[in-house]
Image (cartoon, rainbow, N blue to C red; front, side, top):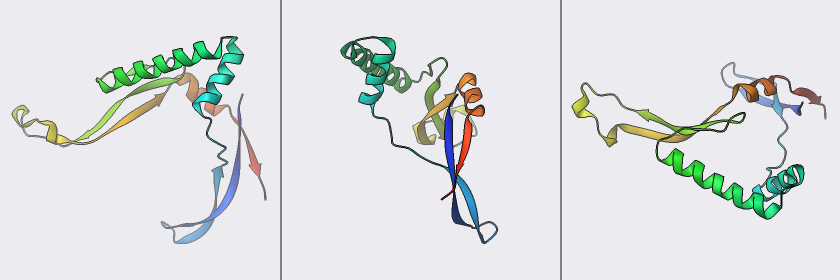
Length: 127
């Protein structure tokens, strides 16, 4: 089970035109790829160089498949794929690439990850 901390911060809420204290999760540092590989290699008892090579291959494979229109299912982690916002047309003959307004990479967490988030221990930090 994981744990996160929340801290209150005074902020103006425009909808009600008033200042309120809003709870925000405390954001820790960003874990770099090298740190992740080191941790995983120790946990799995796999040479760091082997894990680094495998990780690079997996990253490249995910990019290849996603950029070629596939969704990539990473099991208990979730699914990556391209999401688009498009304009509409009156008939199929009007469809062209100019109808794409925006493309982005989408991530949908797995059911297991969503359930794990719901079991997080939340601690309020008072300053």
